[in-house]
Amino acid sequence: MSEPSIFKADQLTPIKDLKLLVKDYPPIAKSALTILVNLSAEAEVLEPLAKDDAFLESILSRITNPKEPNATLHSELLANLSTSDSLARLLTFKRPAIASLTTATNALDQLLALFNANGNQKYNPLASFEHLAYLFANLAKVITSVHPFSMLTLLSHFPTVSNHLADTVSKPEPLLATISPLTTPPTLPFTLRLGTTSCIRNTLLSLPSPEIAIPPLVPHILPSLLLPLIGPDPAFSDAETELLPPEMQLLGPEQQRESDPKVLEQIVESLFLILARGGQEAKAMTKGMGAYAVLRECHAEVEDEGIRESCERCVQLLMGDEAEGAEQAQGGEHGEGRIVEFKDDADGHQSVTVDPKAKGESDSEEEKMVEMF
Image (cartoon, rainbow, N blue to C red):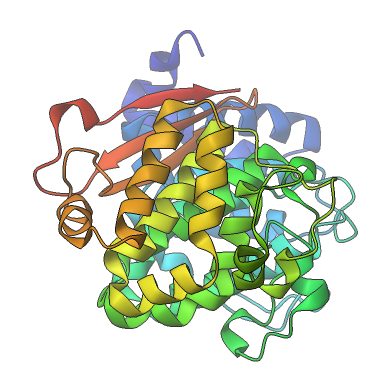
């Protein structure tokens, strides 16, 4: 948007007008939403929008309406608003149950139900809700530290990056019993893949008491992190194959490694955080599930030097270099102590903000913006 300042005049009066116009006829509402999606990247616009309970309810009521033609734009706007910490109140934000969707009466549970229900666009054929993955990734950095078990429940609703988990593995833990079956990484939308893996990463980074909280997660999330690192016909020995989770031992030539470096970075950094923050138990479990062979093959096949270096750091931890891993986990030279935030504009351009969290992080790892198309 070339002149955003015109919408900030008279104490944001134009913004107040746009908030009313999103309730108008669909073509008018679409234009108003498009402008708000673009303007919500501006801090002075973001906070008044995000903190307005009435406006939040207006967005939620339209997102969850199965006949709303602008539900996709509403979900993009809500994802942008989630860069404000005030959106953590979605965890306790009460609203009427939606008979056609869920009996839940808090907003976050309703959004999770919507995220799962519309995977095949049956709930609202006019909409796509993949941008809600960005919402959940952004919320992870806030909710996890305050309500860790609620964040783990959120993770339980996330789609795995493979249908192997849902088809072949029994999931006795209620926490992860509702993982949705979706197809392998190349067929998932980029927004969904990046948002999902970033939510896992942000959660692992923010969990309090990680040596207690992370090990129970490892059996459930590790297959979803390892699978997209494997390409067709990996050079695993028989002994290495036997270590892998059962659903990963019979992969055919159609198996494809995740091709996008941004998604790969989130996956490998998630593995690093499991190893660096989860203590000896998480490290032993990860090693026992064949992670070393997967990282070795990924390192050999990918060309991105940053991904290769991240694989090397994970291998150092797996092979016992705990001193270096502990230092990096506290925010050493590689800056693993970072939270990822997502913002969209109405044209579908996505950017990622890297928010330094760890002490001692180098100047080169200060806040960055990377355009993703």
